[in-house]
Length: 288
Image (cartoon, rainbow, N blue to C red; front, top):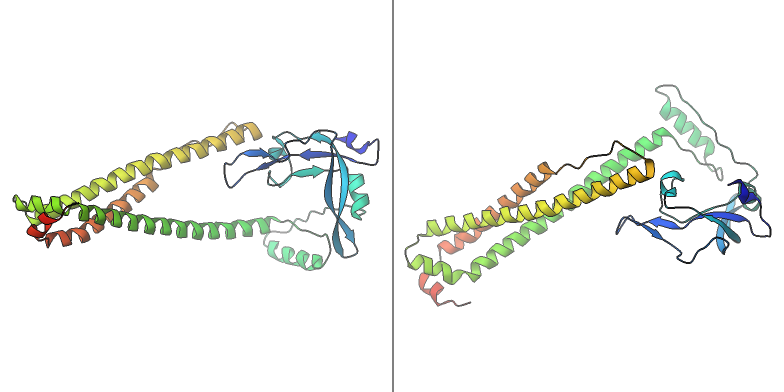
């Protein structure tokens, strides 16, 4: 890395991380500029301090080296979310207008964390280029994130269950309407309304069980793929040996299955009430 400070012309050397981690779609590292090579001249925008304001100026730099994909596990806090251009400290300090880089660590006494955190924030208030990181802020951020995540997950699950319930009800109702002639025939040959209602409810339970089995297989496979991807990242990136083991999500599947079966029973019960009042003659005259 020290060789980056040695440049033969007006362009400084830079180390470039030419990947980003696609967190939304396929969860893979993707190349950003396919044609980027060592020795290329690229234009970047650098924040420049002018008094209490920051402006951005364009600068040309030479690609002195390209980082491998593993940098995502060993680099700074971007974690592969952005393309990175690393410049020599001497050059960056000259063009950015900052003469020094300082970092101060403060350790507070037990029970004084909040007081110290607020006091330092007050001191750094309206100070340009001053930032503070603390364990307290990380804890607060984690708590807020956990609460938001829980609310978001609850809302998503509720919407999914609502849509699934409406889908099941409409499917069962449509199925009963299509089979009106069949039900009328069964009533004509001697099946009682109670027996017909019982048959419809049993068929709905079977429908719910089959749906739950299919959902369990698909959901279990997706969870397996997530654990597999996580283990590959941990083992290749960090060299970890104690990796999280895949466990089939039994409890969530049982809860989902119970909810689906209850929805099926309720939907079939409501629809079967109409079948009980079915006129045999009218039903026999209905054709699909």
